[in-house]
Length: 82
Image (tube, rainbow, N blue to C red):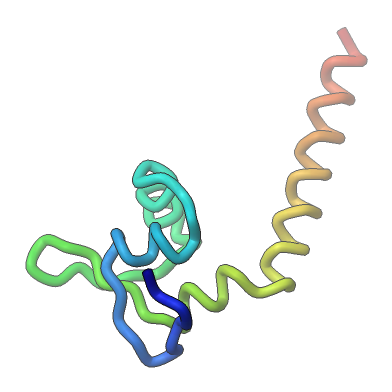
């Protein structure tokens, strides 16, 4: 297993999956939604270490929490209207 993510390193989706401790489907979802930018080389994705580090940063986590709270608030409003 990888101990340290190097900003200039290049990682496969399998390596990224191990680093982030998420499932294969989650990695695919992150790539599809553009939360992790990657380059496709020979039919396989390659992810820069700086992209992994960006995803792990506290600022991104904070944005995700705010986004979730806004979504939850909107759902509760719609349910309460019923």
